[in-house]
Image (cartoon, rainbow, N blue to C red; front, side, top):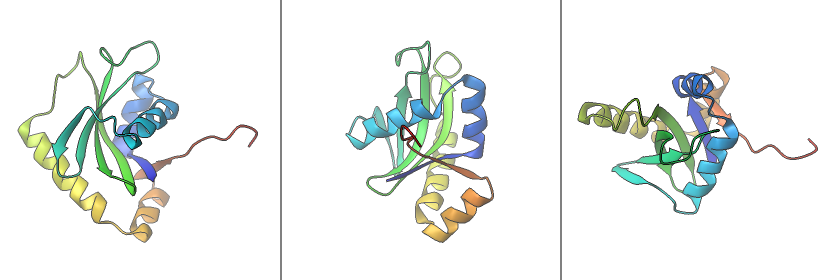
Length: 127
């Protein structure tokens, strides 16, 4: 399964100190079925434990997810900043997720090349 983050999420994660390793750990948990909430359509919510913060007091993420195919981190927020997303935000995320999941590989590669998506890659020791 390929995993990505949108440009706005990438900027937010850098500001919050959320590392790709944190995101990849979440991806592995999701692949094992550990999802905090299903938000309808392709959307899920996943808590992250970022450096110095546990999952309970940490980060919440909104993710577009198609099992075995593609996962895209769309939004992140600290629990102390925002408790949840609004109904209006949920509708917008659902439309965005629908559009992302409908893309073919060529379109995905163009978004990566244009910097709109960044692929999360496992780092292999010694490479």
